[in-house]
Length: 451
Image (cartoon, rainbow, N blue to C red; front, top):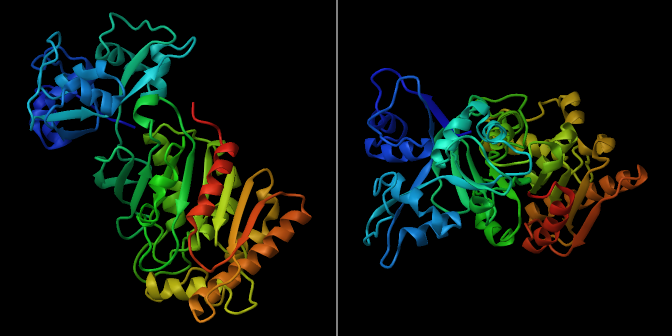
């Protein structure tokens, strides 16, 4: 949700801008987002929207209309850039700009009013309170709160703390890939999250389905992994938000039985905190019909595990070389043993995911093959390699388990009459972009469409 504040006696817009943005000169942005004609006249008790923004530097030949078209899909929104940047006041014409001019690009969406929709309805949906209708009217220069179907409104927005997450770092300069880092009591360090937006997110006003995409294990794996693997190109033109969070080098998408380095509760972070934060700060379908879980290797297991435990949260699950069988021990070690060992070495300083001896109830709760019925009515997509490198122990151990476990899982699904799409392909334990390209249309077909 966008940040808000209420003016107290003696407050000024420049003071609020200094506190919110660290820059008192950003008061025109606040005035523009709230439809305030005179920034020097603001009464105590006035509730304000504090939108996010980015700064761009005008290049030779740039105009405010061209920048508005580039960022908002509407050159007529040039007045927003002019006022938010302090280059013009209410009623002033949009000025020319020189190369090197700093332009404040407020975070906003062009929203088309639906049939029988009121401004109070839109305020409640967008800001969580119908009382913001008057602010919406003022920001859009409306004489009152009357709107008609098909009318286009400019809705200022942003991201804020919530759901147990405090933003400690962020970068929203890219038009699609936005980065956040959070402080959370669930994890003893500040995990990062990449959020990949659809190409038209800033101009469509649509609500979108979400794919939670989980990375694999290892010291070279984190929230940036899928960007390095080309996820922007793989999703170009796709009407879906892709959320790619940290999951630890060997977090196994679990709350571990023991840790000697403080909390590493990745399941709490992802399920109890991140999903709610994403739904509260982006235009998402906030129900299971609008979400998919997917991942590679450890992340593929994570997608299956989360669907096992929370089947109502996801409608589609994809495991790219992800193991669905924790107890399988042919060949040894079991996936539980590997989870315990890798986590002890890489993440927990001797702690374990499942305990030694195993916490059998935890293993059973997390084990996809023990909860086949939880996958009924879900779309399921599985990929496994059939020819791991014979001289690479790691490749052999991982993909041999993956392939055998997926075959076991598929057989159990078939016996229960639950369909799945599966692919056995040459090669070993690595992410295959061509398989993700094959996976994505099925994800989109299963989830609620953008609209």
